Image (cartoon, rainbow, N blue to C red; front, side, top):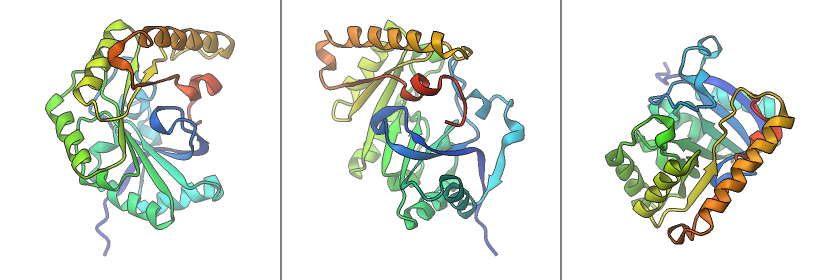
Length: 243
């Protein structure tokens, strides 16, 4: 009798392009899990934790997820991104990662770096995205230190990403980069218009946000090695879900 714990899944979709971090532009499928230990003020997937998406949660086994991804993506992919919420809350994700690897599919993960799971060591591309002051959340530096040190000692492929909305957030991103100078760092312009559905209004605003961030980063001596990104999928699809 199987004792595998099922996974709370909010969304399965793709293939699409990854819009954030070190795998930006990568063709990928998405697995969005339910639940988060944070409640960021500007979260673009609050439905994963605020109760509004409770009716969409499906409890699925690893094999069921992999099979549905294959059906949705029609086999035209070799990369899956696990997102949330915070997937790091789920110790039962290891079988999913192993199942995808058995199908020759690479696995990416994004998490805020508040929880460690041993299955992190199986992830092909792991992004740690600690949340800046504008989120209203407090960073657990001891937890983040532990995760970074564990990944570095295991020689895993990972990066850091900070979303920036204002100068205080940029100072936070700079602090993160200087705290972990050997880890690739991505700084990304935040989307502060989550309710805007008119792309003719949203896109020019997001471009201006990105231009502002570039202008702030370029003169800073301490940010020589960072990558400065837009939130790519919002430029193309705005605030739509499932893309």
